Image (cartoon, rainbow, N blue to C red; front, side, top):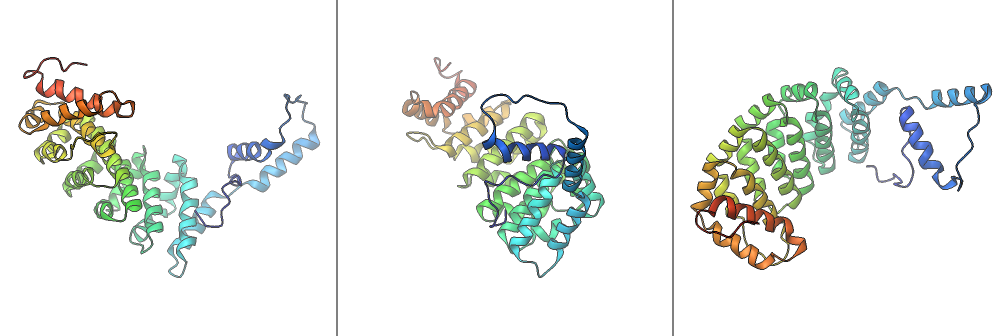
Amino acid sequence: MASGDNPDQPRQPRNLQGLLKFAMEATKDEDAPHPAQLQPMNEERRRFLEEALKSLTVDIVQQLEKSMKILLESDTDDDAKAEAIDTVIDYVQDIDTANDFYKVGGFVIIKPGLESSSAEVRSGTLRLVGELAQNNPFCQQHLLELNILARLTELLSDEPSVAQQAMHAISCMVRHYEPCLAAFIEIGGLECMLGCIQTDNEKLRIKTSFLMANLCTELAPVRDEFIKLNAVERVMAAVKPAKDYDAKLETALSTLNVLTECEEGVQRCREGNLKQKLETILKLNADKEECQEQVEYAQTLLKRCFSAEQDGTDR
């Protein structure tokens, strides 16, 4: 957002729903302690409100084109570009406006934004891609045609805030749209995800784990492909018993739970030294409330992978 924005000031409305929200926020401190007595609206009051609404009406296409112009001008400073991206994002949260944004040529700003020297502009552009693609096959198709997936995977190695948004954008593009997922796999996207699972960037790791779990649960062939890429072995290497809560450990255990929902994944776990690690995790943290999830993951893995060897690991 622009540095001059006041977070306490309600955002100016752009439609009737926004106007109602704006009015409620702007007058909440003036609310009477008792319910108001509603009165019929007279003609003069009605005309006044109609004029007020007209004065607040925004030409959305005009605003989008204005923002596009700012983003395409080479001499525009990065703060102004970041603010323009935020303006576009505000509008394209509505799926019809997102589709209209493509139709008026709005996607022309995406590639330059992804190549910007400004981390704020790169991050904002990635947020825009995510907003356009999420649950929107029309935009997913046209973003795929824009050939930006390779650039998105490159940005997974960018600074933390940018990398996190890159994974979010990838997730929104490939989920529930198999042509995008196929293209992502073709350029080595699954290998990139495995690298992100092992990173120290916690938010990136969590976003990657979420996407991996979603893809593996919905599409068994994707889970099998991850396993062929030695995902089980790589994630097992990240399982390091810790006293007290450890976010990286929890992510690794959660990912293993997804990968062991088939016999091949279970067998690979048995071939490592996972059993001893899981037992140590339970010994160190079984009674700690903050470790409840990682303890449950460890118990499930012990039961699933090693119950034939050891009894008494049931919950």
